[in-house]
Length: 204
Image 1 (cartoon, rainbow, N blue to C red):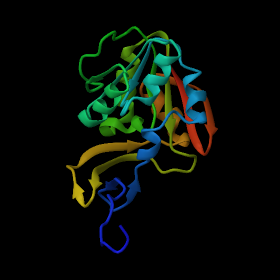
Image 2: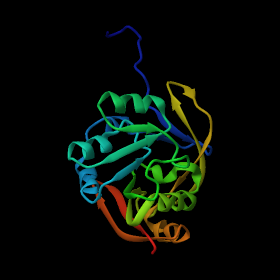
Image 3: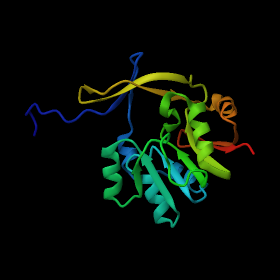
Image 4: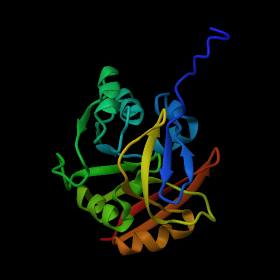
C-alpha cells in the first residue's frame, strides 16, 4: 500500500566480525539450478552427497534426472523447504555420522559451503573420508584475486543477528594449497556466469 509506511523484509546478510556485510543470494537458493550449476551437476557421478544443501535445489535436480542423491544441512527451515518439494534430505552436520560414508562417488560443496567450519583443509579431509576410491568433490570457489582465510561471521535478518560462527573463504588462487593440505588434488577449475568451480580428487 503506497504511503502506508510499511517496509518489506530486508535482504539477509552475512556479517563478518570486521564489519563487512555480504548480501545472501536467497533468490538463487530457492530457484531451479542456474545454467552454470547445471554444468557442475553434469560432472557429478552418482551417488551424490550435497553438503549444505539448503532448500535442496541441486538434490532435487539430480533426483529428477534419475540419479541417487542425498542432501544434508543443519538449518531446519531450509530442510522444510527441501522436503516440501520432495527432495531427499537429512538434518545432519557433515562431521556427524553420514549414511554411506566411504561409498559416495561425488560430494557437492556449492554456494560457498567450502567455508563450513572455518577450516577448509579439515573439511576436505572429512569429504575425502566420505568419498569412495576414485570419488570426486565438486566445489565452488571465490574468484581469482580473492583474499581467503578463516573468519567469524553471523547471519542478520531484519535487524536481528544470530550468533557468531567460524567460516572461511577459499579463492581459486588458494585451491591447490588447500587441497594439498587435505590430501586431495585439483583436477579442473572452470568458470561460468562470473562464478568459479573446481573438481578435486582424493589422492590414491
